[in-house]
Image (cartoon, rainbow, N blue to C red; front, side, top):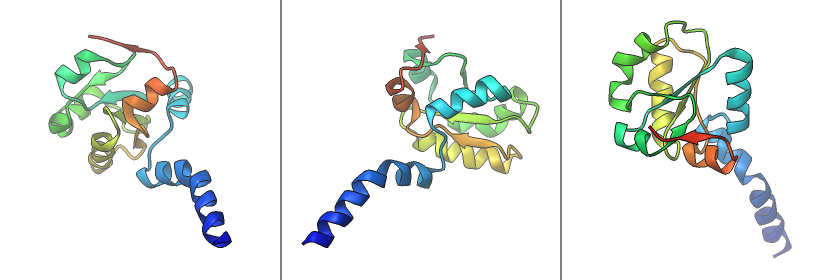
Length: 127
């Protein structure tokens, strides 16, 4: 019984770190550092109607289905960090995989998506 409680406690403490690491995403505060220090580009892969309802300030909209065609035109320098964001993070994770296949080795998803961005009290805007 004591072992079960200890394991459950440890899992509860480390779950946020484990789940974020498994998704391979960048935390919202780390994304801001990349934007400010390394001129990272923030790409929102939501559909246009979702983007219009609210998005991170400074993000550019490329729906996931159009990413392969539009990303090379929007981000010419493949060495800059590219942060992909969607509402919750799942589409952004798929987009990061696509971007890496296109040669954007520093592409990564925003862990937790726009929801996590808002929870971190980072600025959003409506189109």
